[in-house]
Image 1: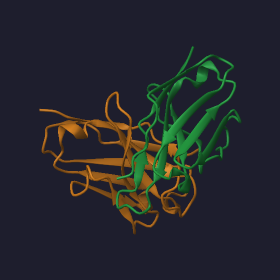
Image 2: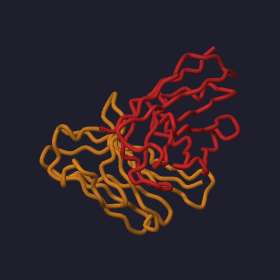
Image 3: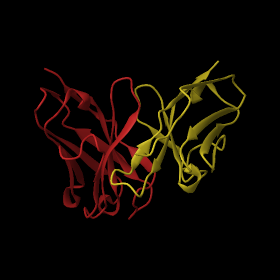
Image 4: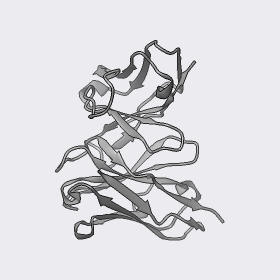
Length: 122
Length: 109
């Protein structure tokens, strides 16, 4: 069974830094492009970032570029999101999600974690 | 940047057909994916590449895409279909390619 488990969400002050993690199981993690998607309370889905299966391609939403950095460790079956210079508007539930096909690039997302909540507040 | 527009809400009686639209400039040239999200749960992929269904998704869910509008159709609607639905595309010419629609709340009367 495919599982993605996010962690690292906390309450943090504006300007702070945080690293989210996503640990995968049930599939060959190294073969799949993985994404971060967030959802502010009561709002819709917002795509945040992706990292290709080999880590060679990374993309970011305009709202986080220059502040967030995505990375992965295939040996640990883990994905990370380093979040710096956090803003109140970064408050959201952060999901990691895998693409449907291996070695894909910008494909549909067929498995999602349950999310980790980041609250940016003074 | 690329924008996807959905109606905020759609209401449908049980057993009837719900159609959820997703509007975007020349969206017919892109692959559209649809996600269902129930309260307190993670999104679930229900249609990908315009009209394909992942395993385990009922045939009642179907999709189409042409011109400036993609459509998710839910036939023989059930109470359990009540959820938020989001369309999604990749804007491959952009350096921020991921785009989700604004979301549609489907209410089963």
